[in-house]
Amino acid sequence: MPEIVLGIESSCDEMAAAVVRRGTEILASVVQGQVQVHQPYGGVVPELASRDHVRAISQVVSSALQQAAVAERELSGVAVTVGPGLLGSLLVGLSFGKALAYRLGIPVVGVHHLAGHLAAAELCAEELRPPYIGLVVSGGHTALYRIEEGAAPALLGETRDDAVGEAFDKVAKLLGLPYPGGPALSKIAERGDPRAVGFPRPMQEEPGFDFSYSGLKTAVALEVESRRSLDDAAVADIAASFEAAATEVLVSRARRALREQGIGRLAVVGGVAANRLLRRSTAAAASKDGFSAFFPPPEFCTDNAVMIASAGAHLLRRGLRDGLDLTCFSRVPLSEGRWAGGGGA
Ligand code: KG4
Ligand code: ZN
Image 1 (tube, helix red, strand yellow):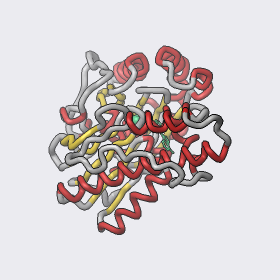
Image 2 (cartoon, protein in one colour; image 1 turned 120 degrees about the vertical axis):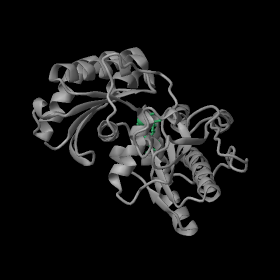
Image 3 (tube, helix red, strand yellow; image 1 turned 60 degrees about the horizontal axis):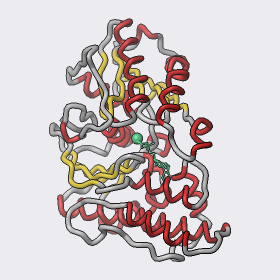
Image 4 (cartoon, helix red, strand yellow; image 1 turned 180 degrees about the vertical axis):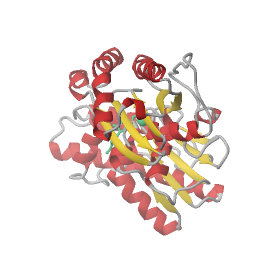
């Protein structure tokens, strides 16, 4: 029987379920966002996120199975995100996944959210094989990892304060753009001049691989405050200048990691990897420096369950199984290795 894994992802404000065959063949992917729930508050309200997940999960899982034309009894395992993320949200997916696996008499396996993001890149590009550098850029994380076959991902550096996606979201709010901020900011930035305001490029010249985004966010806040009013053109210019600074730092830190680690492949994953400027400037750096850059298609950069099903399938293939005592974590390092699916231990 071909191995068919159901993936469930509910770590933040997306409820997602997916069905993947043999770890790589996508049979179904359903993602249900919560824009209407959180928009009035300008950001994710954790309690409302978990309540909405409770309402949505049964339907989202059923839709995924239906889309895949797979019956429950054909499933060989359930993979579920165990962290990092919002505990209330994680618990919904975890409890549902464990109960379903128990009822069907099949294994359940916990997947690290970032291992999932990395697995999305491997799934989408056969040529992406370890060793490679993984640049994880999302709403909660900004980090560089060295991914080696048969070893836990090694953390090279990470943000000391805000994540880059968080900076996109906060700057969008400062500019009066609607939640979710990152995509809205990026859209308006297309009409602006990236050289209009010379924002700082934090950490760009520092040794090591850490990042910092709170200073850049403050610089934007000061710029906004210094202006009496903001017309559409000013918003577009500030958005474009911020986006240029935020993405330039990512590309230059990634180039440094590739150079110093002597590696020729880069995978950029997580919600911010959907950003068009980041994709364009990484591709330009890749052709200049002679490395290969891999990005999942945009729908698999932002949170989805295909990446969880795929990472989970690798873990199940290695014989890993979790019990009904499987729990979830608001913070848990990927470098620990236990949940490292994509190319990891
Ligand atoms: O991976 P993800 O869906 O969820 C987390 O694990 O955090 O990433 C969400 C983040 C948000 O901060 C969102 O604003 C950002 O990714 N994002 C973008 C774009 N699309 C999503 N940021 C910049 N440009 C985009 N096109
Ligand atoms: Zn994510």
